[in-house]
Image (cartoon, rainbow, N blue to C red):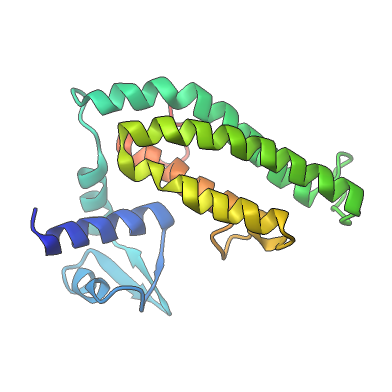
Length: 190
């Protein structure tokens, strides 16, 4: 694969994982649009069906690929962490009685401690995932930036859907694992 093919594949990967990218993020987006793999929607670019198929084909690990079995073996641990990430995000938004979080400093401090514990365990998992596929190891930095920012007081960095918040980055990891293992949207990554 030459440099432009690698760049195209990387861009398709990012689009498939993130769902959309700003239209001005990479000049290759225009090429993907011309090729029918992407579509400009407002200020964003999304994959077309052809682009989705190309990304899935590029990312899918074959049945005989040893990385596939190694990733599948890690999925039970991922599932436990996935549940914990969701619980922390829900606790940030809702109190235990189901009412909206009014952001009492004491309660919010417990959410920060819970996120720090989840993050410690997530980094351990990502080290293992990164040993299987180095690209997966890149999530450690993205999650650390989000966690550190949240713990430093930027409350949008836990669950904001429009920023590279902890939940958003975690969902990118979740989506990438689905694509690598060939799982359809909505299924548990097992």
